[in-house]
Amino acid sequence: MSSKIVLVAFAVIALAVVSAKRSEKYYARGHVKRIPCGSNEFACKDGNACIPIKWTCDIEQDCDDGSDEGLTCPTDCSHANQFSCKNKQCISRDFVCDGSNDCGDSSDETDCEHFQCIEGEIKCDNFLCIEEAWKCDGYDDCLNNWDEKNCPSG
Picture 1: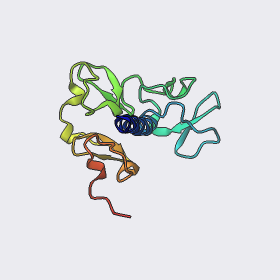
Picture 2 (picture 1 turned 90 degrees about the vertical axis):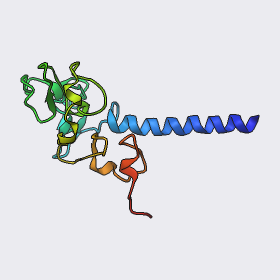
Picture 3 (picture 1 turned 120 degrees about the horizontal axis):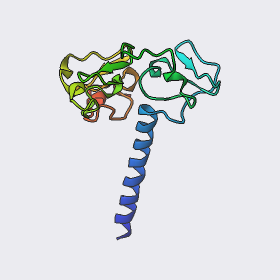
């Protein structure tokens, strides 16, 4: 009986570790770097953090002060990090072809085979876009293990 408890506890811990890595990669809340910022980073106006430039104008507030979604972001959904739904709603490109109806009219989940990932990302065989660096990193970022197949060994 105690070996079953140990096995269940191990499985729960392993799942928590994987969830923590996924949370850090996908949401990175609380994982921002302090300034000075690099050339590929955005300095939050409060001076407390740097975030990747691709997180600006993506309809998600990543800076505590909201400066990454501030007055410089277009309101017509024309920014590279934004997607215009057929119903004129604007969502983050991160939510396109992710298997969830984020637009409300499913327009973010249609024609996924032709959807282009942004620079620095690769498209999984299930149409999700993930960071290039996540390929062969030991974590199932595509949710079907595609990004962990055909990886160099050792």
